[in-house]
Image (cartoon, rainbow, N blue to C red; front, side, top):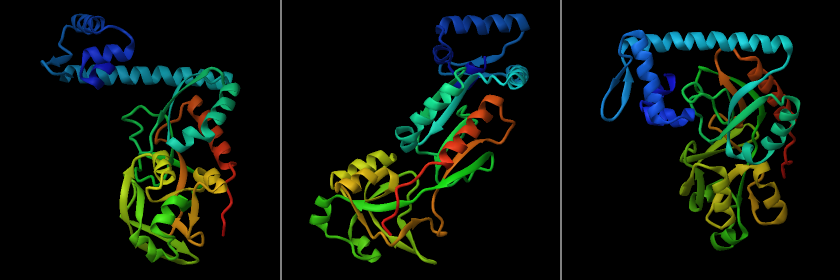
Length: 296
């Protein structure tokens, strides 16, 4: 019933639950007959809960939450966490250090199943059913709890082919004349840099945009412009000469002069035992990660 209310479509809800749409419809109809009232208002395009349906959904949610907490308490007493955890991670984490960390976690806690969603955007954890997220950047939503595990050191870089064609920027002002590769979901039209105690903003000329840092890396490799990417992301490319680091004396920062951070996020509510185990594990693992040294 909750899945039908969430998706506003019986067929889609059935598919999500692994049953046919007709079976899902029969189950809803049987519940309505048992309660003697209509729980959903049906139209040709969607299905939505009636007032009575909303009350039933609230009661079902409270009952399921109570059962989940009871089961979780038993797991905690036995120190055997189990169940499913939905984890959202940015593309860089999912493609680099996260698989190894999760392999270690799986060996320690084989009864926990992990469902991983990859996104560079900050999603609504509650609305999307996410238990834990690994996110780089800011966390404006006060409904989330954030644990800062590390800072992200970004560098400017471009391919030798691009620099041969467009020239090497020697100063921050030189960047104004270059094609810049930006992250379309969170990049401002100004890039900010810090040297010592001074923070400077430079109006850049966005040439290509992408909502994935791995795509920006490929753009830079193919000579499309100057990218601003994490040092660890471009470490091998810089060491091999495939990319050239630019203006290494400057730190890439926010307008406030702060470095971006990596956060472990979870909804502002009581953590289930299995989720707390994952949060503690990831906090320890990510805080211990080493980073490619600066050229400064």
